[in-house]
Amino acid sequence: MTHQTVDETARRSLPAIRRRDLVAAEVTKILTHPATLIAIGITLLLNTALGVVHAAGLVRLGVGGRLVPLSELGTLMFAPVYVFLVVPVHAAGSEYQSGQIRVTLAAVPNRGALAFAKLAALLAVTIPAALLVFVPGRLSITISDGTNAAGILLDLGRWTAAYTLMALVAYGLAGLLRSTIAPLAILILTPVLIATGVFQVPEVIRLLPDQLSLSLLGTPQYPVTELPPDIAAATLTTWALLLTMAYGFALDRRDSQ
Image (cartoon, rainbow, N blue to C red; front, side, top):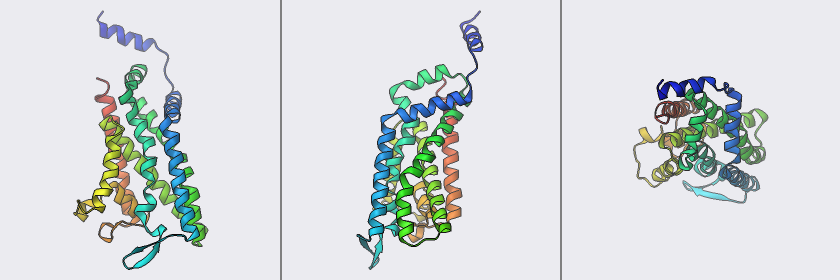
């Protein structure tokens, strides 16, 4: 009997691992990582501060020869998301840096089930966390602006979609790159390079995740990069699906070798 046969027989003798147990284990990993609570706390603080400052009317910035409230500066209002992205990046990338991924792969022979559990756990954590970090700030802004109930719900829906889809983009990148630093560097430097004029191809820029998010929120960074919110949402969803599927494929093929 070969070693491979013995190993396969041992695997078959193990009790089946339930998917909900895998998801629970991955949720625990995310929630117990120190970076998770720190990132959520800082993002909540930043978003709430921006909301309170806007509601109080304390700051108006000169843009295009006129003074505008903070809520019209999409790049500024959306900036705290890059702190929040520490959560999905560490959910996918930290196991590679610590070597924990070897233990995880050895414990879960079914790579497809593991990929599903990781993605489900990410969504189970990031969606409620996203609501926690931006709802207080957004309510401060929309209520102070006199927005009606339907407008408030639409605003919160757009922000939920933007945060969730950006989290999936960051998660997929972190898994593919097996890093917690490179994905954040890419996602943070991209809008910086756009703002400084290093990238000057609007047809390409408007399709990048950060610019799609701003269009989805109705606050594009530049008129030439603006897309209709529904088109922006669909394109950003495509980014998220492609990257998460690519990471799932890598987890199944590359990391199991």
